[in-house]
Image 1 (cartoon, one colour):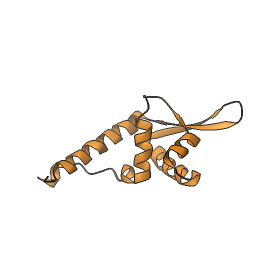
Image 2 (tube, helix red, strand yellow):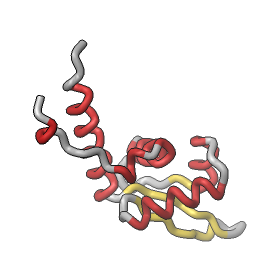
Image 3 (cartoon, one colour):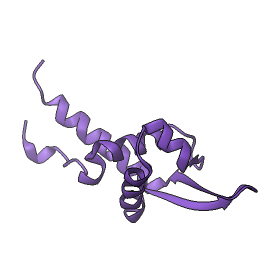
Image 4 (cartoon, one colour):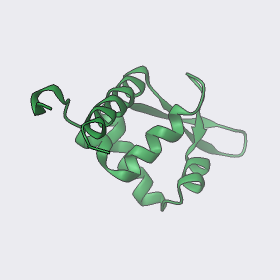
Length: 104
């Protein structure tokens, strides 16, 4: 198999914590959100670690976050963008192609 036919894996997504964030958000219906706190608990990440990864993904426009008022204070919600879903789909396809080249 020629290596020129294999798409490179997106290094931004390839980091395990970021991959887990994108996969978790991709499991939601388009436009649905998760609160920062819920995402943190689901992924078992520290707040600082999650913030760092979310910023990198938001800088790439793979997700967006916004603060909303819930009556008791501010809540940060996170949602996957169409660009993020497309990037995850491309990453998944590239990984499948890469793994498909392995002999059984």
